[in-house]
Length: 462
Ligand SMILES: Cc1cc2nc3c(=O)[nH]c(=O)nc-3n(C[C@H](O)[C@H](O)[C@H](O)COP(=O)(O)OP(=O)(O)OC[C@H]3O[C@@H](n4cnc5c(N)ncnc54)[C@H](O)[C@@H]3O)c2cc1C
Image (cartoon, rainbow, N blue to C red; front, side, top):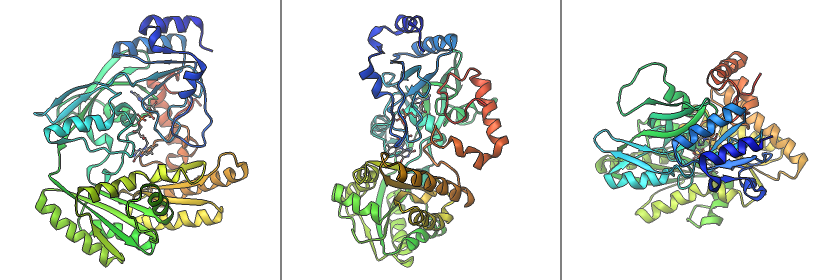
Protein backbone atom coordinates (compact mmCIF):
# COMPACT_ATOMS: atom_id res chain seq x y z
CA UNK A 1 0.00 0.00 0.00
CA UNK A 2 1.19 3.49 -0.90
CA UNK A 3 1.31 5.50 2.33
CA UNK A 4 0.05 9.08 2.80
CA UNK A 5 3.66 10.01 3.47
CA UNK A 6 4.76 8.82 -0.02
CA UNK A 7 1.85 10.63 -1.65
CA UNK A 8 2.69 13.86 0.18
CA UNK A 9 6.34 13.59 -0.90
CA UNK A 10 5.31 13.10 -4.54
CA UNK A 11 2.97 16.10 -4.42
CA UNK A 12 5.73 18.20 -2.91
CA UNK A 13 8.06 17.35 -5.80
CA UNK A 14 5.74 17.79 -8.80
CA UNK A 15 2.64 19.60 -7.51
CA UNK A 16 -0.86 18.23 -6.97
CA UNK A 17 -1.82 19.11 -10.60
CA UNK A 18 0.57 16.44 -11.87
CA UNK A 19 -0.64 13.68 -9.53
CA UNK A 20 -3.69 11.48 -10.21
CA UNK A 21 -5.31 9.38 -7.48
CA UNK A 22 -9.00 9.19 -8.46
CA UNK A 23 -10.17 5.66 -9.35
CA UNK A 24 -11.60 6.81 -12.71
CA UNK A 25 -8.23 8.30 -13.69
CA UNK A 26 -6.19 5.35 -12.42
CA UNK A 27 -8.28 2.86 -14.41
CA UNK A 28 -6.91 4.26 -17.69
CA UNK A 29 -3.40 3.24 -16.58
CA UNK A 30 -4.41 -0.26 -15.47
CA UNK A 31 -4.23 -1.55 -19.07
CA UNK A 32 -2.07 -1.31 -22.13
CA UNK A 33 -2.65 -2.53 -25.69
CA UNK A 34 -2.01 -6.18 -24.75
CA UNK A 35 -5.11 -8.33 -25.22
CA UNK A 36 -6.29 -10.99 -22.79
CA UNK A 37 -4.25 -9.56 -19.93
CA UNK A 38 -5.60 -8.97 -16.42
CA UNK A 39 -5.72 -5.25 -15.61
CA UNK A 40 -4.07 -3.97 -12.41
CA UNK A 41 -4.75 -0.60 -10.79
CA UNK A 42 -1.83 1.67 -9.93
CA UNK A 43 -2.08 3.58 -6.64
CA UNK A 44 -0.97 6.87 -8.12
CA UNK A 45 -0.07 8.28 -11.55
CA UNK A 46 2.50 11.06 -11.74
CA UNK A 47 3.45 13.15 -14.78
CA UNK A 48 6.95 14.62 -14.43
CA UNK A 49 7.94 17.74 -16.39
CA UNK A 50 11.74 17.42 -16.13
CA UNK A 51 14.56 14.94 -15.57
CA UNK A 52 14.97 16.44 -12.09
CA UNK A 53 11.34 15.54 -11.35
CA UNK A 54 11.95 11.97 -12.51
CA UNK A 55 15.09 11.70 -10.35
CA UNK A 56 13.26 13.00 -7.24
CA UNK A 57 10.29 10.66 -7.83
CA UNK A 58 12.61 7.67 -8.23
CA UNK A 59 14.44 8.63 -5.03
CA UNK A 60 11.10 8.62 -3.17
CA UNK A 61 10.22 5.23 -4.67
CA UNK A 62 13.66 3.86 -3.76
CA UNK A 63 13.51 5.18 -0.19
CA UNK A 64 10.10 3.63 0.42
CA UNK A 65 10.65 0.58 -1.85
CA UNK A 66 7.56 1.38 -3.91
CA UNK A 67 7.30 -0.08 -7.45
CA UNK A 68 7.47 2.42 -10.29
CA UNK A 69 6.27 1.83 -13.88
CA UNK A 70 7.40 4.15 -16.68
CA UNK A 71 4.75 4.56 -19.37
CA UNK A 72 4.71 6.19 -22.80
CA UNK A 73 1.62 5.78 -24.97
CA UNK A 74 0.80 2.32 -23.55
CA UNK A 75 0.69 0.69 -27.02
CA UNK A 76 3.05 -2.19 -26.19
CA UNK A 77 1.76 -5.71 -26.77
CA UNK A 78 3.46 -7.64 -23.96
CA UNK A 79 1.86 -6.22 -20.79
CA UNK A 80 4.91 -4.00 -20.32
CA UNK A 81 3.18 -1.08 -18.62
CA UNK A 82 0.69 -2.94 -16.44
CA UNK A 83 1.35 -2.02 -12.79
CA UNK A 84 1.07 -5.56 -11.47
CA UNK A 85 2.21 -4.68 -7.95
CA UNK A 86 0.33 -1.38 -7.61
CA UNK A 87 2.60 1.56 -6.82
CA UNK A 88 3.48 4.53 -9.04
CA UNK A 89 2.87 4.88 -12.80
CA UNK A 90 5.23 7.46 -14.26
CA UNK A 91 3.61 8.93 -17.37
CA UNK A 92 6.36 10.34 -19.59
CA UNK A 93 4.02 12.10 -22.04
CA UNK A 94 4.80 15.64 -20.86
CA UNK A 95 8.54 15.25 -21.46
CA UNK A 96 7.87 15.78 -25.14
CA UNK A 97 10.40 18.21 -26.58
CA UNK A 98 12.62 17.71 -29.62
CA UNK A 99 15.70 19.36 -28.14
CA UNK A 100 17.94 19.45 -31.21
CA UNK A 101 18.39 18.32 -34.81
CA UNK A 102 22.12 18.38 -35.52
CA UNK A 103 22.66 18.32 -39.29
CA UNK A 104 26.47 18.20 -39.03
CA UNK A 105 26.49 15.09 -36.86
CA UNK A 106 23.25 13.65 -38.28
CA UNK A 107 21.70 13.24 -34.84
CA UNK A 108 18.58 14.39 -33.02
CA UNK A 109 18.21 14.77 -29.26
CA UNK A 110 14.71 14.18 -27.90
CA UNK A 111 12.83 13.75 -24.66
CA UNK A 112 11.14 10.36 -24.20
CA UNK A 113 7.54 11.59 -24.60
CA UNK A 114 8.10 12.71 -28.21
CA UNK A 115 5.85 10.78 -30.62
CA UNK A 116 7.95 8.95 -33.27
CA UNK A 117 6.07 10.56 -36.16
CA UNK A 118 6.60 14.04 -34.66
CA UNK A 119 10.37 13.43 -34.77
CA UNK A 120 10.12 12.34 -38.40
CA UNK A 121 7.95 15.34 -39.31
CA UNK A 122 10.70 17.56 -37.90
CA UNK A 123 13.73 15.85 -39.45
CA UNK A 124 12.14 15.50 -42.89
CA UNK A 125 12.28 19.32 -43.12
CA UNK A 126 16.06 18.86 -43.26
CA UNK A 127 15.93 16.00 -45.80
CA UNK A 128 16.59 13.43 -43.05
CA UNK A 129 14.92 10.27 -41.77
CA UNK A 130 14.66 8.41 -38.46
CA UNK A 131 13.95 4.92 -39.89
CA UNK A 132 12.33 2.86 -37.04
CA UNK A 133 8.72 2.60 -38.07
CA UNK A 134 6.39 0.56 -35.83
CA UNK A 135 2.74 0.29 -36.88
CA UNK A 136 1.96 2.76 -34.08
CA UNK A 137 4.35 5.44 -35.38
CA UNK A 138 1.69 8.15 -34.98
CA UNK A 139 0.97 7.34 -31.32
CA UNK A 140 3.96 5.56 -29.75
CA UNK A 141 6.62 7.53 -27.88
CA UNK A 142 10.37 7.54 -28.35
CA UNK A 143 10.90 6.39 -24.74
CA UNK A 144 8.51 3.46 -25.16
CA UNK A 145 9.93 2.44 -28.52
CA UNK A 146 13.54 2.62 -27.30
CA UNK A 147 12.56 0.57 -24.25
CA UNK A 148 10.89 -2.07 -26.45
CA UNK A 149 13.56 -1.77 -29.17
CA UNK A 150 10.69 -1.47 -31.60
CA UNK A 151 11.01 -2.67 -35.15
CA UNK A 152 8.34 -2.14 -37.74
CA UNK A 153 7.94 -1.95 -41.46
CA UNK A 154 11.41 -0.73 -42.47
CA UNK A 155 13.40 -3.29 -40.44
CA UNK A 156 14.60 -5.33 -43.42
CA UNK A 157 16.83 -2.66 -44.95
CA UNK A 158 17.24 -0.22 -42.09
CA UNK A 159 17.27 -2.38 -38.97
CA UNK A 160 15.42 -1.64 -35.73
CA UNK A 161 15.51 0.98 -32.98
CA UNK A 162 18.78 -0.27 -31.41
CA UNK A 163 20.63 0.53 -34.63
CA UNK A 164 19.77 4.23 -34.21
CA UNK A 165 20.32 4.89 -30.50
CA UNK A 166 23.63 6.65 -29.88
CA UNK A 167 23.20 8.05 -26.39
CA UNK A 168 20.86 7.94 -23.42
CA UNK A 169 20.29 9.91 -20.26
CA UNK A 170 19.05 7.53 -17.59
CA UNK A 171 17.67 7.91 -14.09
CA UNK A 172 18.98 4.85 -12.27
CA UNK A 173 16.98 2.89 -9.69
CA UNK A 174 18.59 4.93 -6.89
CA UNK A 175 17.63 8.26 -8.52
CA UNK A 176 21.09 9.14 -9.84
CA UNK A 177 21.17 10.69 -13.32
CA UNK A 178 23.78 9.43 -15.78
CA UNK A 179 24.58 9.75 -19.49
CA UNK A 180 25.93 7.01 -21.71
CA UNK A 181 27.02 7.34 -25.33
CA UNK A 182 26.70 10.58 -27.29
CA UNK A 183 27.12 11.99 -30.77
CA UNK A 184 30.35 10.23 -31.72
CA UNK A 185 30.11 7.62 -34.45
CA UNK A 186 32.65 5.51 -32.57
CA UNK A 187 32.38 4.85 -28.84
CA UNK A 188 33.73 1.75 -27.12
CA UNK A 189 34.25 3.21 -23.68
CA UNK A 190 33.27 0.62 -21.09
CA UNK A 191 30.33 -1.77 -21.35
CA UNK A 192 27.73 -0.89 -23.98
CA UNK A 193 25.04 0.31 -21.60
CA UNK A 194 23.20 2.22 -24.33
CA UNK A 195 22.56 -1.17 -25.94
CA UNK A 196 21.57 -2.70 -22.59
CA UNK A 197 18.97 -0.02 -21.85
CA UNK A 198 17.58 -0.20 -25.39
CA UNK A 199 14.99 -2.93 -25.04
CA UNK A 200 15.18 -3.08 -21.22
CA UNK A 201 11.42 -2.38 -21.00
CA UNK A 202 11.82 0.07 -18.14
CA UNK A 203 13.14 -2.63 -15.82
CA UNK A 204 16.57 -1.08 -15.21
CA UNK A 205 15.91 2.68 -15.06
CA UNK A 206 14.03 5.55 -16.65
CA UNK A 207 15.11 7.09 -19.97
CA UNK A 208 14.89 10.89 -19.84
CA UNK A 209 16.80 11.90 -22.98
CA UNK A 210 17.71 10.11 -26.21
CA UNK A 211 20.28 10.87 -28.91
CA UNK A 212 19.33 9.16 -32.18
CA UNK A 213 21.17 8.66 -35.44
CA UNK A 214 19.51 10.11 -38.55
CA UNK A 215 20.10 9.19 -42.18
CA UNK A 216 19.55 11.10 -45.42
CA UNK A 217 15.94 10.56 -46.52
CA UNK A 218 15.72 8.37 -49.64
CA UNK A 219 15.17 10.35 -52.83
CA UNK A 220 12.58 8.01 -54.34
CA UNK A 221 10.47 4.96 -53.49
CA UNK A 222 8.29 2.49 -55.32
CA UNK A 223 5.69 0.15 -53.85
CA UNK A 224 4.78 -3.18 -55.36
CA UNK A 225 1.94 -5.59 -54.57
CA UNK A 226 2.19 -9.27 -55.58
CA UNK A 227 -0.86 -11.50 -55.47
CA UNK A 228 -0.51 -15.24 -54.78
CA UNK A 229 -2.99 -18.11 -54.97
CA UNK A 230 -0.83 -20.15 -52.60
CA UNK A 231 0.68 -19.04 -49.26
CA UNK A 232 3.73 -21.29 -49.68
CA UNK A 233 4.62 -19.59 -52.96
CA UNK A 234 4.41 -16.21 -51.25
CA UNK A 235 6.68 -17.53 -48.48
CA UNK A 236 9.23 -18.80 -50.99
CA UNK A 237 9.18 -15.52 -52.93
CA UNK A 238 10.45 -13.63 -49.87
CA UNK A 239 13.75 -15.50 -49.73
CA UNK A 240 13.99 -15.35 -53.54
CA UNK A 241 13.99 -11.54 -53.55
CA UNK A 242 16.88 -11.45 -51.07
CA UNK A 243 18.70 -14.26 -52.93
CA UNK A 244 18.60 -11.96 -55.95
CA UNK A 245 20.56 -9.39 -53.90
CA UNK A 246 17.72 -6.90 -53.54
CA UNK A 247 17.10 -5.56 -50.05
CA UNK A 248 13.74 -3.78 -50.08
CA UNK A 249 13.04 -1.22 -47.38
CA UNK A 250 9.85 -3.13 -46.61
CA UNK A 251 8.57 -6.61 -47.43
CA UNK A 252 5.28 -7.49 -45.78
CA UNK A 253 2.86 -10.41 -46.03
CA UNK A 254 -0.89 -10.62 -45.50
CA UNK A 255 -2.83 -13.90 -45.62
CA UNK A 256 -6.34 -14.40 -46.93
CA UNK A 257 -8.20 -13.74 -43.66
CA UNK A 258 -6.22 -10.53 -43.15
CA UNK A 259 -6.73 -9.38 -46.77
CA UNK A 260 -10.50 -9.84 -46.61
CA UNK A 261 -10.85 -8.18 -43.23
CA UNK A 262 -8.64 -5.23 -44.15
CA UNK A 263 -10.37 -4.72 -47.50
CA UNK A 264 -13.75 -4.55 -45.81
CA UNK A 265 -12.25 -2.03 -43.36
CA UNK A 266 -10.33 0.39 -45.64
CA UNK A 267 -11.45 -0.41 -49.25
CA UNK A 268 -7.94 -0.21 -50.68
CA UNK A 269 -8.66 -2.46 -53.67
CA UNK A 270 -6.94 -5.56 -52.25
CA UNK A 271 -7.68 -8.83 -54.13
CA UNK A 272 -10.31 -10.49 -51.89
CA UNK A 273 -9.74 -13.99 -53.30
CA UNK A 274 -5.95 -14.04 -53.01
CA UNK A 275 -4.48 -16.60 -50.62
CA UNK A 276 -1.69 -14.13 -49.78
CA UNK A 277 -0.21 -10.85 -50.92
CA UNK A 278 3.29 -9.48 -50.54
CA UNK A 279 3.73 -5.74 -50.23
CA UNK A 280 7.19 -4.53 -51.09
CA UNK A 281 8.80 -1.11 -51.16
CA UNK A 282 12.20 -0.28 -52.62
CA UNK A 283 13.76 3.11 -51.94
CA UNK A 284 16.95 5.07 -52.62
CA UNK A 285 18.25 7.02 -55.63
CA UNK A 286 15.68 7.35 -58.40
CA UNK A 287 17.65 5.33 -61.00
CA UNK A 288 18.36 2.51 -58.52
CA UNK A 289 14.72 2.39 -57.43
CA UNK A 290 13.55 2.08 -61.05
CA UNK A 291 15.94 -0.84 -61.64
CA UNK A 292 15.11 -2.58 -58.36
CA UNK A 293 11.35 -2.30 -58.92
CA UNK A 294 11.68 -4.03 -62.29
CA UNK A 295 13.87 -6.74 -60.76
CA UNK A 296 11.44 -7.33 -57.88
CA UNK A 297 8.56 -7.54 -60.36
CA UNK A 298 10.46 -10.17 -62.35
CA UNK A 299 11.41 -12.28 -59.32
CA UNK A 300 7.85 -12.20 -57.96
CA UNK A 301 6.45 -13.33 -61.32
CA UNK A 302 9.04 -16.10 -61.57
CA UNK A 303 8.06 -17.25 -58.06
CA UNK A 304 4.47 -17.73 -59.19
CA UNK A 305 2.65 -14.49 -58.37
CA UNK A 306 -0.59 -14.40 -60.34
CA UNK A 307 -0.43 -10.61 -60.52
CA UNK A 308 2.23 -8.00 -59.75
CA UNK A 309 1.20 -4.33 -59.54
CA UNK A 310 3.50 -1.34 -59.10
CA UNK A 311 1.77 1.64 -57.45
CA UNK A 312 1.49 4.34 -60.12
CA UNK A 313 1.48 7.36 -57.82
CA UNK A 314 1.67 8.47 -54.17
CA UNK A 315 -2.06 8.04 -53.74
CA UNK A 316 -1.94 4.36 -54.76
CA UNK A 317 1.17 3.85 -52.63
CA UNK A 318 -0.37 5.47 -49.55
CA UNK A 319 -3.49 3.32 -49.92
CA UNK A 320 -1.42 0.11 -49.96
CA UNK A 321 0.41 1.06 -46.81
CA UNK A 322 -2.75 2.26 -45.11
CA UNK A 323 -4.13 -1.21 -45.80
CA UNK A 324 -1.10 -2.87 -44.23
CA UNK A 325 -1.09 -0.59 -41.19
CA UNK A 326 -4.80 -1.27 -40.68
CA UNK A 327 -4.27 -5.04 -40.31
CA UNK A 328 -4.54 -5.22 -36.52
CA UNK A 329 -7.35 -2.65 -36.07
CA UNK A 330 -9.29 -4.36 -38.86
CA UNK A 331 -8.83 -7.86 -37.38
CA UNK A 332 -9.82 -6.50 -33.98
CA UNK A 333 -13.31 -5.91 -35.41
CA UNK A 334 -13.85 -9.61 -36.16
CA UNK A 335 -13.86 -11.04 -32.66
CA UNK A 336 -13.76 -9.34 -29.22
CA UNK A 337 -10.13 -10.36 -28.52
CA UNK A 338 -7.09 -10.43 -30.80
CA UNK A 339 -4.05 -12.23 -29.41
CA UNK A 340 -1.15 -11.06 -31.58
CA UNK A 341 2.27 -12.69 -31.33
CA UNK A 342 5.61 -11.77 -32.87
CA UNK A 343 7.56 -15.01 -32.95
CA UNK A 344 10.39 -14.50 -35.42
CA UNK A 345 12.41 -16.94 -37.54
CA UNK A 346 15.28 -16.69 -40.02
CA UNK A 347 13.57 -15.50 -43.22
CA UNK A 348 14.44 -18.71 -45.08
CA UNK A 349 12.16 -20.49 -42.57
CA UNK A 350 9.11 -18.31 -43.28
CA UNK A 351 7.40 -20.98 -45.44
CA UNK A 352 7.86 -23.54 -42.59
CA UNK A 353 6.52 -21.09 -40.02
CA UNK A 354 3.49 -20.24 -42.16
CA UNK A 355 2.72 -23.97 -42.56
CA UNK A 356 3.13 -24.55 -38.82
CA UNK A 357 0.76 -21.69 -37.96
CA UNK A 358 -1.92 -23.16 -40.24
CA UNK A 359 -1.40 -26.61 -38.70
CA UNK A 360 -1.67 -25.19 -35.17
CA UNK A 361 -4.87 -23.28 -36.10
CA UNK A 362 -6.49 -26.46 -37.43
CA UNK A 363 -5.30 -28.59 -34.50
CA UNK A 364 -6.84 -26.24 -31.92
CA UNK A 365 -9.83 -25.24 -34.05
CA UNK A 366 -8.92 -21.54 -33.91
CA UNK A 367 -9.02 -18.75 -36.45
CA UNK A 368 -5.49 -17.39 -36.86
CA UNK A 369 -4.85 -14.54 -39.30
CA UNK A 370 -1.22 -13.97 -40.25
CA UNK A 371 0.44 -10.82 -41.46
CA UNK A 372 3.72 -9.13 -40.68
CA UNK A 373 7.22 -8.13 -41.56
CA UNK A 374 7.97 -11.27 -43.52
CA UNK A 375 11.16 -9.91 -45.06
CA UNK A 376 12.82 -9.91 -41.66
CA UNK A 377 11.24 -13.19 -40.56
CA UNK A 378 8.90 -11.42 -38.16
CA UNK A 379 5.35 -12.76 -38.56
CA UNK A 380 2.33 -11.65 -36.53
CA UNK A 381 0.05 -14.69 -36.19
CA UNK A 382 -3.10 -13.15 -34.70
CA UNK A 383 -5.59 -15.37 -32.93
CA UNK A 384 -9.14 -14.09 -33.23
CA UNK A 385 -10.93 -15.10 -30.07
CA UNK A 386 -13.03 -14.01 -27.09
CA UNK A 387 -11.43 -13.67 -23.69
CA UNK A 388 -14.80 -14.43 -22.03
CA UNK A 389 -14.84 -17.94 -23.52
CA UNK A 390 -12.75 -19.89 -21.00
CA UNK A 391 -12.70 -23.13 -22.99
CA UNK A 392 -11.55 -21.37 -26.17
CA UNK A 393 -8.92 -19.39 -24.24
CA UNK A 394 -7.38 -22.67 -23.03
CA UNK A 395 -6.92 -23.64 -26.70
CA UNK A 396 -5.54 -20.16 -27.44
CA UNK A 397 -2.86 -20.55 -24.75
CA UNK A 398 -1.87 -23.98 -26.10
CA UNK A 399 -1.65 -22.56 -29.63
CA UNK A 400 0.51 -19.63 -28.45
CA UNK A 401 2.89 -22.06 -26.72
CA UNK A 402 3.15 -24.17 -29.87
CA UNK A 403 3.83 -21.09 -32.01
CA UNK A 404 6.75 -20.13 -29.73
CA UNK A 405 8.03 -23.72 -29.58
CA UNK A 406 8.01 -23.87 -33.38
CA UNK A 407 9.77 -20.52 -33.79
CA UNK A 408 12.57 -21.58 -31.43
CA UNK A 409 12.87 -25.00 -33.10
CA UNK A 410 13.28 -23.23 -36.45
CA UNK A 411 16.21 -21.22 -35.07
CA UNK A 412 14.11 -18.16 -34.26
CA UNK A 413 13.23 -16.15 -31.19
CA UNK A 414 10.29 -15.46 -28.85
CA UNK A 415 10.05 -11.82 -29.81
CA UNK A 416 11.21 -9.89 -32.85
CA UNK A 417 9.95 -6.55 -31.64
CA UNK A 418 7.21 -6.62 -28.99
CA UNK A 419 9.40 -7.52 -26.05
CA UNK A 420 8.91 -9.98 -23.20
CA UNK A 421 6.96 -7.97 -20.60
CA UNK A 422 4.68 -10.25 -18.62
CA UNK A 423 3.34 -12.08 -21.66
CA UNK A 424 6.41 -14.12 -22.63
CA UNK A 425 8.34 -14.29 -19.38
CA UNK A 426 7.42 -17.93 -18.75
CA UNK A 427 8.92 -18.99 -22.09
CA UNK A 428 12.31 -17.30 -21.62
CA UNK A 429 14.17 -20.41 -20.49
CA UNK A 430 13.10 -22.23 -23.67
CA UNK A 431 15.33 -19.80 -25.52
CA UNK A 432 18.12 -19.12 -22.99
CA UNK A 433 18.05 -22.10 -20.61
CA UNK A 434 18.09 -21.65 -16.83
CA UNK A 435 21.63 -20.32 -16.78
CA UNK A 436 20.74 -17.73 -19.40
CA UNK A 437 17.74 -16.51 -17.41
CA UNK A 438 19.89 -16.41 -14.26
CA UNK A 439 22.37 -14.16 -16.11
CA UNK A 440 19.54 -11.77 -17.02
CA UNK A 441 18.41 -11.80 -13.38
CA UNK A 442 21.88 -10.90 -12.15
CA UNK A 443 21.93 -7.85 -14.44
CA UNK A 444 18.53 -6.81 -13.07
CA UNK A 445 19.73 -7.25 -9.48
CA UNK A 446 22.94 -5.31 -10.07
CA UNK A 447 21.06 -2.28 -11.41
CA UNK A 448 17.80 -2.53 -9.49
CA UNK A 449 18.50 -4.56 -6.33
CA UNK A 450 15.10 -3.81 -4.78
CA UNK A 451 13.09 -4.67 -7.88
CA UNK A 452 11.28 -1.33 -7.93
CA UNK A 453 11.72 -0.65 -11.68
CA UNK A 454 8.75 -2.09 -13.57
CA UNK A 455 8.77 -5.25 -11.43
CA UNK A 456 7.33 -8.51 -12.77
CA UNK A 457 8.52 -7.87 -16.33
CA UNK A 458 11.23 -9.86 -18.21
CA UNK A 459 12.58 -11.52 -15.03
CA UNK A 460 11.02 -12.03 -11.62
CA UNK A 461 12.76 -12.22 -8.28
CA UNK A 462 13.92 -15.82 -7.78
C1 LIG B 1 -1.73 -1.72 -33.66
C2 LIG B 1 -0.33 -1.91 -33.14
C3 LIG B 1 0.71 -2.05 -34.06
C4 LIG B 1 2.02 -2.19 -33.59
N1 LIG B 1 3.01 -2.34 -34.51
C5 LIG B 1 4.27 -2.50 -34.09
C6 LIG B 1 5.33 -2.69 -35.04
O1 LIG B 1 5.11 -2.70 -36.24
N2 LIG B 1 6.58 -2.87 -34.55
C7 LIG B 1 6.86 -2.85 -33.20
O2 LIG B 1 8.01 -3.01 -32.82
N3 LIG B 1 5.88 -2.67 -32.29
C8 LIG B 1 4.60 -2.49 -32.69
N4 LIG B 1 3.61 -2.32 -31.77
C9 LIG B 1 3.95 -2.30 -30.31
C10 LIG B 1 4.15 -0.88 -29.73
O3 LIG B 1 3.41 0.06 -30.45
C11 LIG B 1 5.60 -0.45 -29.70
O4 LIG B 1 6.33 -1.27 -28.85
C12 LIG B 1 5.78 1.01 -29.23
O5 LIG B 1 7.04 1.46 -29.61
C13 LIG B 1 5.63 1.23 -27.74
O6 LIG B 1 5.66 2.64 -27.48
P1 LIG B 1 4.78 3.28 -26.31
O7 LIG B 1 5.09 4.72 -26.20
O8 LIG B 1 3.36 2.95 -26.48
O9 LIG B 1 5.37 2.51 -25.05
P2 LIG B 1 4.60 1.91 -23.78
O10 LIG B 1 3.68 0.83 -24.21
O11 LIG B 1 4.02 3.01 -22.98
O12 LIG B 1 5.83 1.29 -22.99
C14 LIG B 1 6.58 0.22 -23.52
C15 LIG B 1 7.64 -0.23 -22.52
O13 LIG B 1 8.60 0.81 -22.35
C16 LIG B 1 8.70 1.21 -20.98
N5 LIG B 1 8.92 2.66 -21.02
C17 LIG B 1 8.12 3.61 -21.57
N6 LIG B 1 8.72 4.82 -21.48
C18 LIG B 1 9.91 4.63 -20.83
C19 LIG B 1 10.98 5.48 -20.43
N7 LIG B 1 10.96 6.78 -20.67
N8 LIG B 1 12.04 4.93 -19.77
C20 LIG B 1 12.10 3.60 -19.53
N9 LIG B 1 11.10 2.74 -19.89
C21 LIG B 1 10.04 3.25 -20.54
C22 LIG B 1 7.40 0.77 -20.35
O14 LIG B 1 7.56 0.55 -18.96
C23 LIG B 1 7.10 -0.51 -21.12
O15 LIG B 1 7.82 -1.58 -20.57
C24 LIG B 1 2.28 -2.18 -32.19
C25 LIG B 1 1.23 -2.03 -31.28
C26 LIG B 1 -0.07 -1.91 -31.74
C27 LIG B 1 -1.16 -1.72 -30.74
